Structures are given as structure tokens and as C-alpha cells.
Length: 562
Image (cartoon, rainbow, N blue to C red):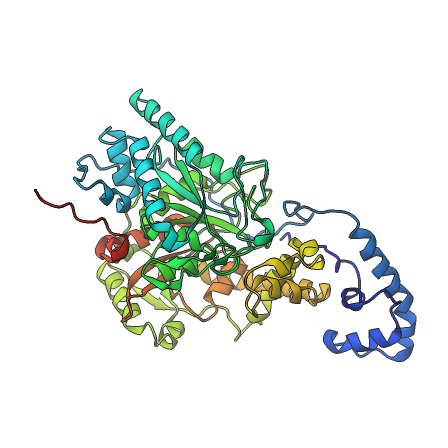
């Protein structure tokens, strides 16, 4: 097990000296300073012990100062890498090329605006059979962005010049019989944490709203190779936190008085409002799952290491993941198949099979349900029960399971890992007070999270990673007995556990509450087995119609009859 031990200003030094460095003024550190620092660090050193270590603490502080004279870009990874694979686990690398079933008899609607909500495979049928051009479809989505996004605030940058160029090339290739596959000619958007050469990459932050990065993220390159058309860079909460960015608050298409949640706010919002055919989001701790739930999208958070993060803003080296946000599980499977795989520019990526075929016999699967979580989720009880009943009718046989949460391990403390790594990724940003420029400054804001991270001792960060190793082993022991585990999405510790262990999840909408807000359920899979949870999610969606419902404000206006 290789562990990512972020060696920042706190690494290989005592926690005391780190704390004192951050709080010291120009005057020399004194024994009284060390004495005060002990309250935070759970130490009880004697006066003699403090006197003995004081010179070393001062030397360490000087080393910090020396290190800060150099510059580390956000893209520079640490020397040690996180690997979620437990001892004895074997990664299946035998892939069978997916045979996507592109329907033949898709009819071009009289009202072209209806295309905005077609599935990727339906759009692929129209494009492949040349019933519509990619240029026409791209222009339709661009027009919808201009019509609706001043209300939704889901788009940072329209990449129109690039989009038209890519669409024209797609049309030429399709006309010449050079069909690349079901994403060929499909317009999409990416979260504005992903770099695209020639366009700004703002990370949602005032401090970076003019930033340009002279590279293109691997995921964007892979989608270009698949023939997809990039039409927009979509909003992220500032530095991947929440739904507030320098342009305002991205809205939930189902309730324009409510934020879209985050931080992949624009990706979920734009997909559900029909501004793009699909979108790419990122997650460190809920940033795909949460906005997908809030907006009623289908979100896939892949296994850690499945999709390259090269060219993507780093928040947490051992937790960041990239995945699709779509209008259906099958769309998510299509997109995931295009973006997965090894990238030499991201050493955490792995070669693993993806054998999705859209067909699954639920009766043949070992399916667990986190019964305690469902019992405690009284707010969504009706929706959860209805969803579970649908799965039973499809053949699912449930077994009650318990996740390895705080009853056996101190799971709650593992969030220290995310905060410490984020503090390292934005060390200079915080020390230079650029964090003051971000719009949101409350207790749950990114600036506050970065500031408090400086008070996490290196020793406690490493100890949390040791508990994380135990959690990985415990979760693997559980998952060996199941193909899929079904859990409520909101609340509890499922989100924290599965992000820390690197397990993949799919969230799908299952209904609307009395206020018209979408609700969701989560399917948890084994490491590198996105195929099974996507097939189960697809089976559920084939038996229901929640994903086929769209927010009224964004629906096409009826064409008047003559």
C-alpha cells in the first residue's frame, strides 16, 4: 500500500514548530509560545523539554521561510502516491469492447428544441444517420445557453470558436463515413477546473478569473478523440467548494431560488436544464454526488485512479476524481468509457476492464442495503422505499449490511486528510492572503477551510492515513461479499467512507419531494467495477421515468399550429 503523505511545510518537522511558524511574528519564538501551542497539539511538555527543543523549533521555522522562497505550482504532485488497492486485490484488465446500441428509428422532432433533452444515443442516431448535423446541434445548444444561462449562471465561458470548428470537422467525417462512435458530434461542457488551451480556466475564483493554462486536460483530449464537441466551461464553486463562484450562485433548474449545490454546480445544472448533451465534473468529497442529487442528474464518481486528473485543478491528491454527470446512467457509461484509462501524466491511473453491456439480471447479483441508514433517513423514507421496491420487482434480493463506520473505526477524523492536502495545494494562496478575494467567506467556505488546515499537525495527518488504511481493508472485506450495495445518498457516513476508500458510486434521481426538489439513491460498487453499478442504475431507470422528467422553465416552447 503506497500512501500519499503530503510533505508540505509540516512534513518531517514537529507539529509544534509548524504551529508556531504560522503564528509567529518577526520576533523570535520563545518558550512561552511553545507552551501555548501545546493546548492545540495535545502535548504536555515540561519546561526542561521545551528548553531542549526550542533551538530545533527555531531552526525548523527558518527552514519554512527558506522553502517559501521557492514556488510550487498547483500541478506539482507529492513524491508519494495514494493507491486504494488492498493487499490481495486483483484488478481485472480483460476488456471487451462495448457494443453501444444506437437506435435506428429516432425521429427528428418538428420542434428542434426538444433535442436538448434527448439521450446521447438518440442524438448519436440522428447524427450517424445524417438527419441532423453536428453544427446544427451545436448551434441549438449554444442558443439555449444564451437564452437561459443569465438565469441559471451555470456557464463561465462559451467555447464557441472551438465548438464550431470541432462540429464542422465532425460533420465532414460523418459524411465521409469516418464515424468515431456514439459521442461523435455530441456537444458537452466541462467543469472549469479542467484546463483547455486558449481559454481561461478560472477555478470559480476571483483570484483566478483571468488565469489561462497552456495545456488541455487529458479528459478533454480523450473526448475530442471520441469526436465530442466542447461548447462551454461550466461553473465550479470557488476552488471546488459549493455553488458560489465569482459570477454569482449557480441555480438548481428545478428551483431557481435554490443553489445547485457543488462544487460541480454548473455541470449538473447545465445537463438538467438541457444546455449541454452531457458534462464532466470532479469530486473530492461529494462534488459530483451532491449537485447531481440537488439537480436531479445521474452522476458517476469513478474509482480513484480510473480517470486522469492531468490538467485538472488539484484540491486533494489522494481524493480528487473526475467523472461524468449526465441525464441517464447509460449516457454516463458512454462518457466514462471514453475518458477512462492510463495516462502517463497521472501516475495514479490504472488499466482496468470496463465490460458494460447495458443488460443485467438483478437476481444473479449479490446486493446489500445499508438498512440502518435507510431506517434513519426518515426525510426520504417514501422515495427510498419506492426505489427499493422497484429493484425488488426487477429481481433484486437484498441482504442487510453495515458499513465500517464509527462503531469500529474513527471514520469522522479522516476528513483531516482532505483539509490538510487542500492546505498544501493552496499553501501560498493562503499565506499571501489571496483567500480574502473569494466571494464566500463563511464557516463553510473554501478560504476558512484552507486557513484552518494550517493548524492540522503533520503527525495527525499521517495518523489519519493509517486509520484510512484500516478502513480500506474493512471496506474491502465487506465488498468481497457483494456486487452492489444500495444506500441513501444524503447524510450519514457513506459519502466519506467511499471517497476515502476510493470505491465508485452512481447516484440516480428517484422522485421529487413536495416542494418539487429531486431526491436520489446511491449504488456503491467494488473497486474498478463501474460496469455493474451502471447496469443496475440503467435497469432501474428503464423501469421508472424520473430521469425523463425535465424542469418546466427550460422545456421547449410549443410551436403554434397554423
